[in-house]
Amino acid sequence: MGDHFSLDVDADVVAAAARRLGERGDHLRGRGRTTSSAPDRWRSGWSSRTSTTVGEEARTLGGHLTTFAGKLDAAGDAVGRLAEDLAHAQGVEIPDLNRRWAAADAAYDDAVAAADARHDRQVAGIPADTPPQVRRMIRMDLDDSRTSGVSSASTARTAAQDKLTLEFDDVRDRLRRHAVRVSQALTQAVAVPVPPALVAAYRAAQGNVLAQWLWNRGGSALTDLLTAAEQQLGGPMDELAGRLQDPPDDYAGIQALLARARELGVPPDQYAPTLREYWNHRAAEVAGIDLAAWDPTLGADANRDIIVEVYEYYARLYLDHPDLQWAGMANMIGPSFAAGFFDLAQFRRIGESVGDLPPALRGAVPPGVDQLADLSVEELRFFETTFLDMQQQIFFDQGAMHQAYVDGGMAAIEEMVAAGIIPPEIGDAWADVDSGVPARVAAGNVRFLLREQQDIIDDDYQVMYDHSPTGPAMTWAMTLIGAPSIPDAQGYADVFPLTVGFDTPGPENIGTPSSIFGRPIPHVSVDNPTQVHVTVETPLPDGNIAHFDDRWALIEQDTLPRYQDLLARDPDRARAIIGSSVEDRIADYRMTERIDEIIGQMLDWDVDVDQ
Image (cartoon, rainbow, N blue to C red; front, side, top):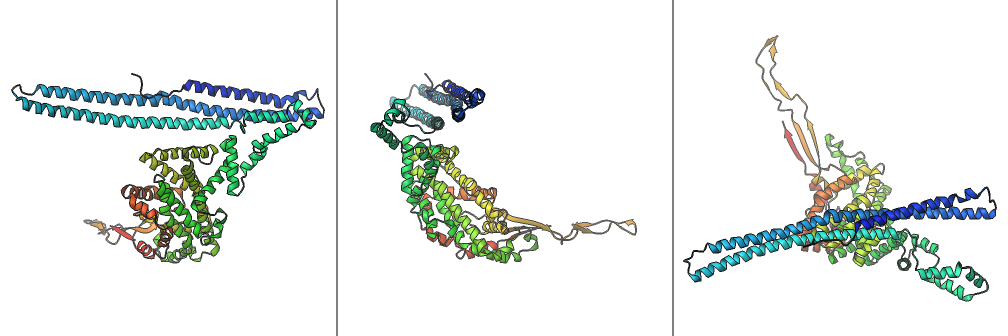
């Protein structure tokens, strides 16, 4: 019997293709050098205006050949990596899957043989004088026992082999995604692939000597042919390329331009700006957001409706597609984030109260906290608009790719990867979400969260922290009073409280002297009851959310597990929260509503005294 799993592809053939691409690249590179240097060789024997013109053309052509050689090299490298991936799959992964498949079959066969042997022994052990009716009943029980054992073995084999089939599907999906990336690399070796018939028409109208003569004689048919070809091509190629890199502002124009690029087979990396703008506009359209009105520099009050619409959009994503767990978490935690937009002026109170801290703790808070009491309107506006800009950046990144997935599935995600809008590892995370396997779905969503915190907004947190003179103090204050609006989730100071310790003055021990007037006497030494070590666990944070490591530690150790536990333990409650009014939840997390909670937190001091 042959192996159960196999891949109908020859990795050696793919590797040979990679080598041939590399050889062609080397050949073209050599031709490029030869062509570029040709004018230097003929300069001494041919010097005229024509030679100068031809020389410039030769150098240009040589440059194009060198550029194309580089693209062939890149394509060859991509094909080579695919060959390595195929070889590893065929030489390591597939044999291992087949070995485990055969082991599952062998375990089943062994279990059946054991059940048969046990059954036969037990049947043979029935006493000869057993009445026939009783013998039949015993035999039926033994038969049932054998059937049950075989059934259990069959269930175990099926479960094991189903798991192996999923693993094989994962290998095939990975190779398929890898092959798509290779195809895109090959496509990118040609600037804009154009249908051959249109190329022929264009050349017939412009490049052929006879056609030029007929044209000069007034050949309207050739003019019509050229015009038709250019119209079908969407206009001159360089004009189209320029528009794709600098798309219009209006949504309809972006849609038309993107459709034209796709129709012509333009490689995605050549229309990335247009594709990015399309998905930004598409997500905004579904969210009901007017992009022309979304201006973070105008402040929170001017953007109030859009702030709410963003989180309502995330809610709909999750409620319609429960595997989009990042969107659900963004909606659930968003209101506490948004409440901070409107409450930054309240941070002055923290600066007013810092003088009440004991001397041992004043050195543990960032310098400048007392200056928060005198925060200017300009300083508050800086932090407010930075936060609003962070919300917009998250929407344009996460909202755009979530909408792409909802509208176009993995094909739309793969297009974004090919365009360079999202990296391949995020494409792989989307494949995890698309798999429907709970563990993979969760892992993919965690990767989105990591991207949000590390790649999208971390630099903005650092800009706030580095903002002189109040950045460290302001971000520390945010860390102090921030509370994620997820059931049972804790603030930073609850998970990582600032702890300080100090010793009271005095000697560690007291006792009698060891001698009097030079004569030794019995010496007694005891602990000094007035000298102790005091440890104070404060309600202050031992960290700053502006720093990624601190922020991610809170997410990883508390916020994320609480959210995931809620989804697993009480999904109906999670849906109820996410589906509730965003405006009401923002109001609930305003400082005026949380004042009792904040006061209680600030009174939670734990003092431990050790002698």
